[in-house]
Length: 299
View (tube, rainbow, N blue to C red):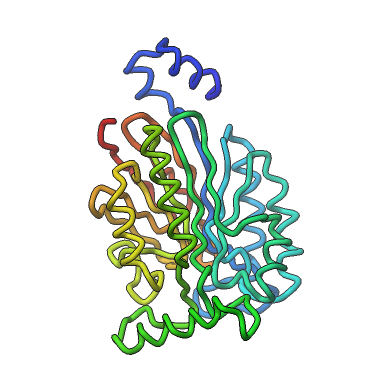
C-alpha cells in the first residue's frame, strides 16, 4: 500500500489532505536489547530481554514496515550471545539494519561485523526518492574491538586523554568517537542528500546532545558532529540509544530522540514504530517508550 502511495505522490495524484492522513513510510526502532545469559543487575534484566525481543518481532511482523533498525548494544557481553538473539532478529520480515554499540564488541570488530552481516560499520540507504537514512559508527574510534597497536585504538587513547584533561563528563571508556574519514563521508552523504532535496535521519548508538540524554554518555566528539549537522538543513533527526532512560530535544532544527533500552523494560517492553509524513515524523512508542510528534519544516 505504501509503495502505491509513494508512486501516486510522485505522479502528483495525491492531495495534500491525503498526504497528511496516510504515512508515506513506516519503520521500526529497537534500542539496547543487551541480551546476555547472566543475572539481573539493578534495572537491567538481561536474560528476559530475549523474550521481549521475541514479542517485539512478532508485533512488528504484523505491520507493513519498510525497515527495522536496532540502535546498538544488541548484546551485553559474551561471545555466544549473538547466536541467541540473531535467529530471533532474522525472523523480521522487513529489511533489517544494525548500528554498532559499545557492548557489541566482545571480540574484534571484524568478528562482530561478520556476525551482524555488515560489510561496512557506517553506511546509508534511501527509502523512496526523498528520504535518506545514515548509520553512524560511534565506536569507530574506541578502546574496544581493535588490536592493541591499532591506529584507531591509539587515536582513542589520545581522544580520551584530551577529554579527561578538560574534565569532560563523557570521558569514559564505554563511549567512543567518529573518525575523520567517517566524518568526511557523513558530510559527503549529507551534501548529496541536500543536492537531491532529501530529508535525512541519522542513526547512532550515542547521543550528541545532553538535552536528549545523560551528558556522561555523549559521543566523545559530539561537538564536532553537531557542527557538521548544522551545516546541512536537510538533517531532520538524530536517533540513538545508549541512555536507557530515553530522552528528547529539539536543537537547531534537528529532532534528537534517545530511545529507551529494552533491557530495562522487563514488564512493559520498549520499542517504537515511526510513521513518516510530509510534515512530521510520528514516533509510536510501545510499552515504556514515549510517543512523539516531530514536526518538520516545509521543504
